[in-house]
Amino acid sequence: MLYILDTSSILSGIFFEGRKATTPGVIGEIKPGGHSWRLLEFMRNSGLEIISPPEEALGEVKKAAKRTGDYANLSEVDMEVIALAYYKKGLLLTDDYSMQNVARELGLDYKGIMEEGIKEKFYWIYRCRNCGKIFEEFYEECPVCGGVLKRIRKVK
View 1 (cartoon, rainbow, N blue to C red):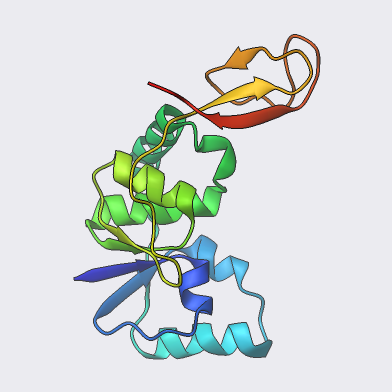
View 2 (cartoon, rainbow, N blue to C red; view 1 turned 45 degrees about the vertical axis):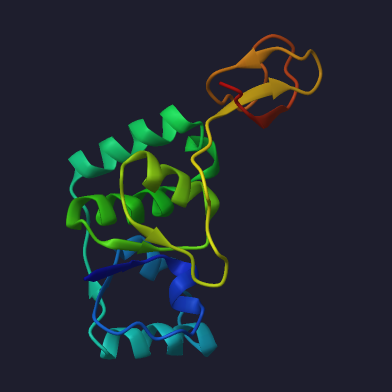
């Protein structure tokens, strides 16, 4: 089993037996020096692999994140980590619910570190807080009135 670690799983301080991998983006999120860096170095010394997922895998993750409505809540690093799990068919270790939701959409296995994890897959839409207009995709501001959009669960 290959474990795919996000930043929070490395910083949890929990040691995972077996093969472990993460992405260059995760490494970039951990600042040199201090306790966090020592945790990362410990993981690297115990065999943590640093792998960049292919662009095709990243593209599939972005499409899935747009389908679920999680795209605006995920960073590029988050999507990179999911893409690595998708590409390597590994077990994604993360407490991030949006990452778990997209993983579930892609049929990937995932596990929470400190939290139990999601029980079901959600789809999200966006509603303007000012005018109430509903949008299927995220915008930085409401295209109708310029208001702030709020993510809400889509009812099927």
